[in-house]
Length: 283
Ligand code: C2E
Ligand code: MG
Ligand code: MG
Ligand code: MG
Image (cartoon, rainbow, N blue to C red; front, top):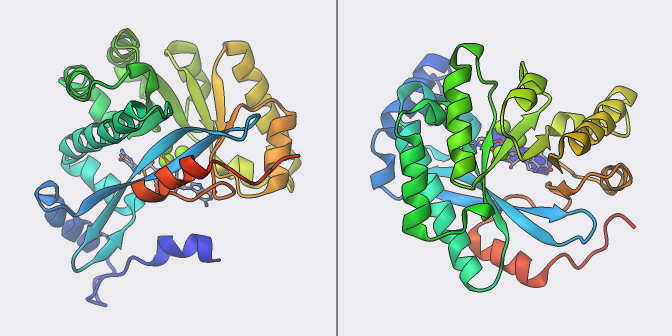
C-alpha cells in the first residue's frame, strides 16, 4: 500500500543496528542540536468542513530530514524527544513556526485554524503558559484560530495542575483538542474534567466504520455524545467516500484524511486552499 510506505522508509545505514535501544540512542544524539541545523520542517494537512467541503483548518505535522538517516517519521523521534527532554524546545519551535505560517495566511484573508500537537511533557513544563502567551504576542495570531492537540491520557496525580494549565489556556483564548480520541485510558474522564473544545476520533475507528458494527456504534455514539457536551468533532484518517458519507449522515462536523489530502508542504497547502476542494465527496 503506497499510502503506508512512508512509514517504512526509515532505515539505518548500518544493518546491524536493529536494536531499539541503539536506535533511540542514535536518534537522541542526533536530536541534540537539530534545531540549529534546518533539518526540521513542517507539513500541513487540511481539515475540511464536511458540510461545505471547504478547508477550515490545517494540522502542522513535524518532519525530520536527517542528511544521513533520511526522513525520520515523528512516531520514531517524538517519543525519544519526550524521554530526553528535547521536546520542550522542539515544541516551542513547532508552535512558533506553525503560528507564523497561519498568521501569514490570515493576513491574506485566509482564515483557517492551525492545529498544533502538544506533548503532555510540554503541558507539565512550568513555563508552558508563558511561552504560549509569548508566541501568541510575537506572531500576532488571533488565538481563536489556534488549536492545541493533546494526545496522551493525563494521569490522575497531575490532575489539579493540568486542570489549572488548561484553564489558563482557556483564558488565553486558544482551543484545546483531544487527539486520537478513544484510544487513551481515561478519555471520558478527561471530557468531564477538562476544558476541551474539540475531539478528534482516532482513525482506527474510522477505518472500520463500514466493516465492523462495533466501530459504527462507537463512532455514532462519540458524535452524539460530543454534540450534547457542545464539543466539535473531527474524524481522523478519512480515506473513503463511504466513511465520509457515514460521518456526514451522523452529524460529524469535520474530517481529515487522505481522501482530501495527505500532509503536504506549505506551498501545496496554499495551492489546495486556492483550488479548494473541487470534487464532491459525499453526495
Ligand atoms: P496525529 O497528531 O494523530 O496526526 C495524524 C497522523 O495521521 C499523521 O501522521 C498523518 O500523516 C496521519 N494521517 C492523516 N490522514 C491519514 C489517513 O487518511 N490515513 C492514514 N493511514 N494516516 C493518516 P504523522 O505525520 O506520521 O504523525 C504521527 C504522530 O506524530 C502524530 O499523530 C502526532 O501524535 C505526532 N506528531 C507529529 N508532529 C508532532 C509535533 O509537532 N509535536 C508532537 N508532540 N507530536 C507530533
Ligand atoms: Mg494530532
Ligand atoms: Mg490523531
Ligand atoms: Mg497521535
